[in-house]
Length: 542
Image 1: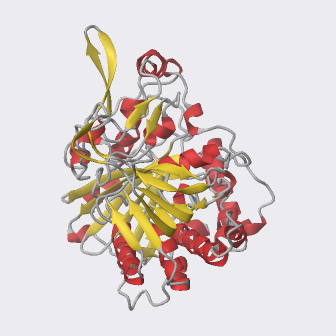
Image 2 (image 1 turned 60 degrees about the vertical axis):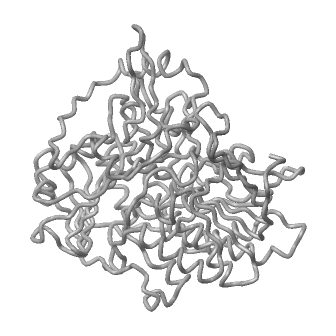
Image 3 (image 1 turned 180 degrees about the vertical axis):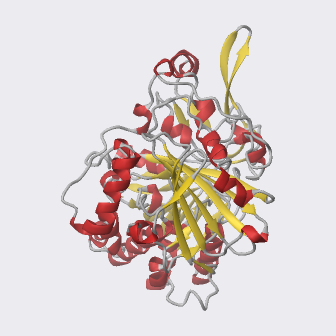
């Protein structure tokens, strides 16, 4: 590290998503003299952004009261909500008057979050925020007293064996008074900081979903701009958390998605193939038939809510957005929460930055406790836990809590297990036989990854690390039937027979940075780390 150059800023932010950009924007709005740098591992701002997405404008109204005049890409206002319970061949619509508030979207906007983030990036740069896309922060740098000093970017141009190639460039250190981590769900550095500072010791274990999304162009007669459809039920078994969305954008575009809780127990389950199977339901197929799939992606979603929130401040820095887990799973919304957390931490920094003795942003915690976001997450705190008791119970209790009790819920349900601990041996579970993709409505993994525009230089160290090379075969394959080849949505992991014995092959160039392997691996043997900056998917307005 001593041979690396360094740069000094007042604030360094890791990640140019809604939370990171909101942090930088708010800092410059409060005090233009505060120097702010944002590092983004994607090739451009928005390249790694994927979300449903319906945006509640409450936070962006606070950040940019004049966002309409600034031509923010919030154009499609929600006009109608539908919630369907699916069986294998039929659907049953819930009357709108019975829908709890979490499934009502009046006043919200259907957006392509990548476009919103690009717009936010432009606003940030106009205000004087320095944004460096294509640079992955791969290490946290500490002061001698243990507080965070900043981050270091990864070395570029390493050969697969770790030796420097002819194009080698060492990483750089960026030092700051405060470093804000906004990497999104299961961020590499955030994970390390939570462990180092034991930020989660008073929280429930975090729990995640894997979310899939495809963007479709459909026939004009199947498009209804402003319509929002959510579904529950088939193809998920009643004891497995999962559901879908279809968001009707303009220009005959529909965002189609599916989320599955990563606390599922059956190692034979393939979340990707469940998503593909969902689209073959008669009432979904008729919307997509005759259309064209334009893009595909997947991402882990931090879904534990308020009870799983770690302590999000520590000496020299803080966690914001989905890095900490501020998403409201009941509303399937996190962008408004991400923006709000960025604004709150910026306010705390602006207040404390002149105090050399104050390294912990305690005002950020106080700001959160006093905010509308805390009230919103508190109202939804039991949402995912009810689904462990089955779909019927979860539906009834969510309705009671969200529609009637709201912020006066007298009980709290706690999660006691991590997602990887939920997986049971393959011998105890029923094998699932999935239909072959038809190439029209349902597709295979490799053709899907192609649509994500994913690219990695093959001659570089593998960014998917195994703590023990023997575990995939000796434990995962023998006990769990090799679940990594099913939970990965990008065909990264496959078991091959080599010289008469099984071996795990890692196709790291396929990785779309969803982080599912880092979460669901039953032995926690796989560690996701950032590859060279600028690599991975290049999502276009996802």
